[in-house]
Every structure is written in C-alpha cells, then in structure tokens.
Image (tube, rainbow, N blue to C red):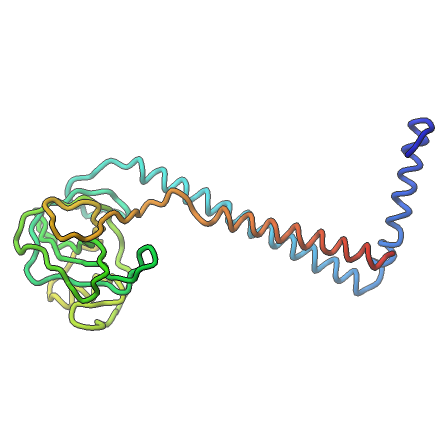
Amino acid sequence: MCTGSSKRCWSRELSEFAGRLTPMFRVLAQPRWSLGLLIATSAAVGFMLLGLWQLDRHNEQQARTTALSDQELVVGLANDATEYQLVEVSGAWQPGSTFEVVPRNRNGVLGASVVSILRTDSGPLLAVERGWTEDIGGLPEPIPLEPVTVVGRLIESQGVGTDALAPRRYGRLDLDAFAADLGAPLFGLALVADSIVPDSSGLVTDLDLVPSSTPHLSYAYQWFAFSTIVLIGFALLLRKVAK
C-alpha cells in the first residue's frame, strides 16, 4: 500500500500494474495467442449478440401476450379473422365428424386432442378442438345437432398433407386433411375451445394459448453467461501462461 503522496502512490501503482501486464502482452505477441484472442473475442461477441436477439424475442412475445390479453371478444366468424383472435361462435355439432390428434402431452401424460366439426350459425363448418383426453381412441362424440356456444381462440392449421394414422386419427391438426376426410370445406382457421355451453364430455378445455412468460429471457441470460465465461477463462489462461 502506498504511504507517500497521492501522485507518487498512483504513479507507483500504475507502474506495478503495467509491469504485471507486460508478460501478458509478450504472450499475446505470439501468433497462436493472437489467434486465440481473436477467436475468444469473436465467440464472446457472438454469444452477446445471441443474447440480445433472445431479449428482442422475449420483448416481442411479451408485447404480443399483452395485446392478446387485452383483446375484446368477437362474436361470430369474419373472413379477416386472425390467429389467436378471441371469438364466440354458436352453431350445432355435425354428426359423425369427430377427429383426434395424437399424441398430445399434458403435464407429462400422453393423450389426444378431440376435434369436432361445428356448423356455425353463419354457415361455415368450423373445426373445434373441444379439449384433451388421456383416453386415446375413445373418440367422444358430442351430441349430434345439439346447439352450442363455444368461446376460444382461433389457430392456424398445423400441417399440410397429413396422412391418417387410423380412421379419424391424425398426428397434426391439418384442416385440409380433415376437409378431405369429410368431403366438405372447412373454415380457414380452427378454434381451440376455452368453454363450451352446454358440454358434458368431461374433456379438459383449459388450454392456455397466451403464455404469461417465455423461455427467451433465460436463454438470453445463458448466452450472456457464455460470453462472460469465454472472456474470463481466456484472461485467466493468459495470466497463467505469462507467469
């Protein structure tokens, strides 16, 4: 510790610090260590950019979640309906038009999503994901022609050209495949039900399509940690070699 004047103290400390750095600079002057510094710096910058990208994705998801949560309920189907739009649709179930999408995991249990076709009061046939069941193959049909009101969010078709795994059983919610199976056109979006009135099927319908959090934030922290580890690790290795 310096005991003289402040100016002398700082001068001595800077001199000692420079003396400790000199061997490290000599090591860095070697081609392989210069290349190592370039690689470590590039990796750290790359990890940092990936972390910033994940932060941007997190912010975008949070903004979309907020917008979806603030949506007003739309009654009926419109030609300009968009994915995740919250709607209320009334109609009657088509006889013999239930499909299952497998496998669907819920809390670690494999099961199936049950999809039935609703003839809406406005005319179009709408694929409605009524809920989830662990009874694969059970294919619970709704009461045919029963008038119902369904509230939920619209989603896009999740596949193209999907082949049936068994009669009325598919690996994806493919609206084109469903329409070909039925021999009738379907509305361009499907509806994931949050509530069905009346409904006595016992299917689980509390599927949340609007997540309150995203994994992107934790991914960003991981990339930032990788960047820090690379820089600190290279500095410690350089210091060890320089001694």
